Image (cartoon, rainbow, N blue to C red; front, side, top):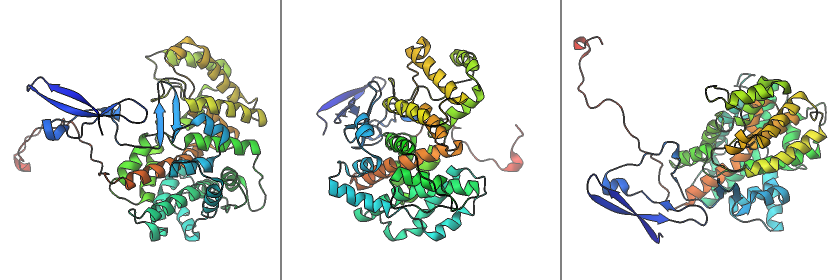
Length: 434
């Protein structure tokens, strides 16, 4: 309930309205405007939802000014250092960290749901060999409702839970199969004796004729990246999942919509854009030239992987993944590669140059994650897929939260219409050529 109100004064029509002010556990106060149109006959206009809270949620909290990210109240720094991905998955889904028995049971459920239907494999053959893995992911994940229609009653809590478990467990298997399809290689079955991250790397790089043993440094790095990308409040793809889910669409269709939204270069494709940028710069000697271009407001060139829409301070995930990035580079053959030297030079400039510091254009999580993925041997077109594997946890957690809300409504934004005013139809033979 609101304990404060905000007075809105309409000077043009000499009227006013009291709007309730809602205060969450953390964060700025929020003015509720749901009755504005009914009472005053006006809409609000907020492109990009810069100042609009679209829902209530208890999952993730962000303070962009202070550089804070918390899952269910736990700082991301503590989770990345002390937890592991499946424990974070449990936390996001159920709201609390699991007891030992709960963790063991949950790990067993996820591990034994990683297989996909054999007939589902036939679907991959319908895609061209060079189809982008994100295109395959969108189609295959959306098709899961045709294979698991036994538990799609979204109003049944048990069905929602089963669908969540299936989705989280099968995303790495589907992602690895998308990669194998693009390579023309045989799909690798999941292993029940491996961790979530190790299992994915094994499905990616093993072949029927040669065993693959995941590097512990790579496994740890991937596990941390999965934690950092698991959720990020009401971003574009999460909002897409919620909007699709508000119509009571099945969860797999909603997650497929989220994957499509994530694919955009302004969202999940940013880490792929970082590598493209580094390849374009080409050599450390060219860094001053491109930095100068980035500072020139009349030049269209932009440094990718710097700054963030929400964080006006250092992205807390970037602080964590920067350390991981240097550890991975030190343990692989990429440590002295020209691209990595180039990336580290850009990092050095961004952290010391007053132009970047004043504008708070710090390296973000996308800058480092792309470098890590490249060092682990993951190709560029799989970068956004890696993001999708992690973010599917946040998507399904938000979808579950929304469907369980008794006050949930179908999403229906309004608009400012700027088209033609009302006009009468003129038969074609009487129209004048314009």
